[in-house]
Amino acid sequence: PRANMRLLMAVLSCAIIVSHVAAFIVQPMSLAVNHRARTDLRACRSTALVCSASDPAGTIRACALLRSADGADVVAAMEAIEAQGTQIGNIPTEKVAGSFDLVFSSTLAKVPLINGYMPTKEVITWDIEGAKMKLDIETLPFLPKVRVEGNNLTWNEAASKVAYTIKNKEDKPPSEWTFFFADDEVLAGRSSVTGLNVLKRL
Image (tube, rainbow, N blue to C red):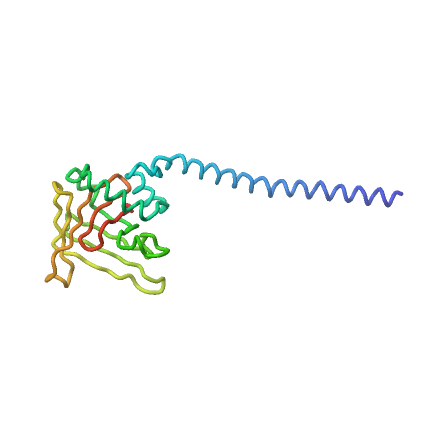
């Protein structure tokens, strides 16, 4: 009987130790899950308006910041804002100058699985003061970046238009971008080469 009692006490002691260890393991996991849930909830709340299908500007922001908007909806949103012309001629220089991640292009909107979103990382920089354009394209991890440069860049703030000639292609017409939407994070415009585009400021 005493041996059985000692065995029972040992089993109970082990059970208590295991329960305490489990509490230390599970509680942080639970807190982490709850924190992620709260974070996701805050993200959903903060982007509730930008994801509204009836808000073209919101669709563009959802495309740039969340990559969550449907490609056809993004194209329709850009066409709607472009047709309104509400921001054309009202986009200040500082909204265009700098580096941007090219997120979406209408030329890819009907490509299966891509849905308009860029499959490679492309960073474009408009150096308005230096009159230069720089486009860095990452293809595969083990390959170097491809760089495209533009010279003689001009910026027409009244028309919200930037133009430049591609290096070594000076015999071709200048490339042009006309912008119709801009805020502190997102830029959208029409390129003479790649159609409608959404960009995210870096």
